[in-house]
Image (cartoon, rainbow, N blue to C red; front, side):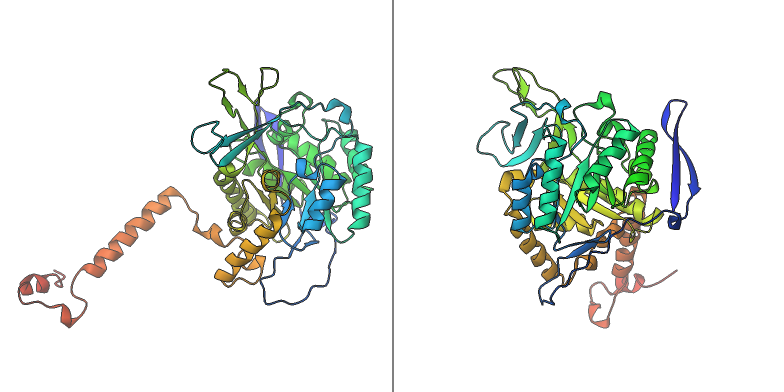
Length: 420
C-alpha cells in the first residue's frame, strides 16, 4: 500500500515523500457481520462495506438527523441502511449553538417563499449534548438494533491523549465504525478541529496515525471540499490507515444579504458568520469531488479494500445512482432528511430500484464505478472529437452502394472515389 509522509518544508504543507508499506503489516479492523437474506426478483440494494452489512446504501449523514436516541431510532425504523450520529467530542460544554442557525436559498428571486429550496446554509456546531449522554444512547441503540449499523462521528482538539480517550469511550458502546470529522467548515478552527485538520495534510497524517493506532473498528475520514485538490487529504487518510473516506462535507458560504435590513443571513442579533452550504445546489460539486477521489483510489489503492461514501444534495434515487456510478459504496443524506423527513428513504430505495431495473442491474456492485471510465482530460476530448470528425468524413466520402449513383452527378461521384 502506498504511504505518504508530509512535512511543512519551506512553508508548504503539501511536501510529499513516498514510500511503500505493505497493507499486511497493519492489523485489519474489518468486521464479519453477515446476515441471511432471501432471494428476490427485485434488484438487491444491500451492500457490504468494510465488512459491515447494510440493507441498502442509504446512510443518515452526521448532523441533526442523528442528534439523539429518538431520531436515530426513527431512522432505523424507517429503514435507513446505517446511521452516523451527530459529531461528538470529549467536552460538550465548549459547544454553544445559536438560533437561528440555518438559512435557505430558493430558486428564482432570493428570499421568495414560493421558489424551490436549492441551497441550505448552517452555522450549527457539533453536538452540544454531554458525551456521556450520547454514549448511553449509542449503547441503547445497539442493544435494540444489534444487526443495524451505527457509526460514531468524532472530532477532537489537537491532542493525542484526547483522541485516544474519545475513541476508547465510543468503541465501548458497541458502535460498528467511526467517521472522523476532518471537515466541519466553521467553529473552533483555532483549536485545530474539523476542516483545520482536513486542510493541512501534515496535521491530518499525524492525527490519522493516532486514530488508526487506537481504533479497533473501521474508520472513515470525512473530507472537506474547501481545498484545492481533495485527492491529497483523501490519499493521506487512506495511506495512514483509514478504511474509507466520505465526501463531501459542506462548502463554506455566505447565504445572502437581506436587501431590506442590509444584514447577512442567518441573522443572529444583527450579525452572522460564514457557514456550511448543502442541498441540491452542491450536488454537481460533490459529484466532481467524489469522481476525483474514486479515480485516485482506483489507480493508487485496491478499491476493493477501501470504501467511499458520497455526500451532497441527495434527494432522489437518481441523485444516489450518480454517486454510485462514480464509485461510491454508500450515499449519505442529511439536509434531505431535514427537508423531507425520515420516510425519504423509502422513496430513495424505490427510485434506485427503478433505475436498476431500467438497466438490468441486479446489485449495487453491478454498476458501482461504471461511469468513471468516461472521464478524461480536455486534451483527450479534443483528440476524440477530431478522430470522430475524420471518421464521419471518411464514411461520407464516396458512394457506399450502387443504388447511390445518379445520372446528373455521375462525373463528380466517380471522382469522389479516386485516390490520386
